[in-house]
Image 1 (cartoon, rainbow, N blue to C red):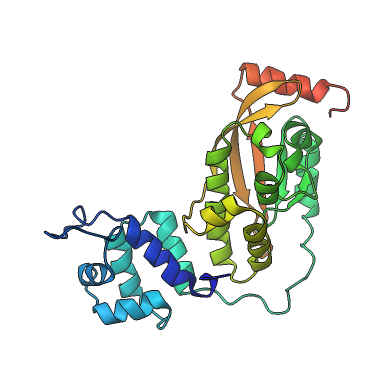
Image 2 (image 1 turned 135 degrees about the vertical axis):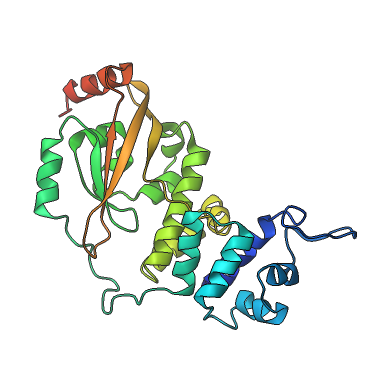
Length: 274
């Protein structure tokens, strides 16, 4: 993958190109022919030598200090998620040895027991690559992607049903890729195969991945079109399960007393439901 061996430099360049030079305090009377800040402008604003910053962005120097990272983050106006991503790229944790190609760790029995007790809610567990590992029967009724054996990202970009299921497909797709990139940086090398496959099979995924946006959405709401029901709006919360597996529990729920709650209850009572 072009540029994937220099993710730090690619991320810095993508953030540099989105900064408005005038807003950053750069006075330039000439007609600018570049997007955002020039390399030397960013370097000077961050208190770095232009030659050092050029080496950093080009991948010829991959060991910036904490002070350098903080200065760059300030000038680039990174939010908390982007700062964490920058840190992960510059100072990655060592990947676990001998795990390449290993099967996904099983979901803990206690979590499976909880899912059995939450039969009236769409809830499911995913691994770092967004593979669905376990879930409630109602989750599958609401969204075919929320059933074991499916991958949330692959469904979004490769399954034509996704544009029907997600009325706000463009926003969901953008957030999905930005979240995956944040996870990939924190789990160095673990998701390279998945990313390579999706880049090869989806032009839209490739463009979003190459934008280098990072985003961690741990709560919110989502609109889903459910066959035979219509569009439901469900809130969700996510819970990172402790342990090295990187499992995350998603729980979706309707607003109390809403039409969505009644529709979800009816879906659970329907033939073939829970």
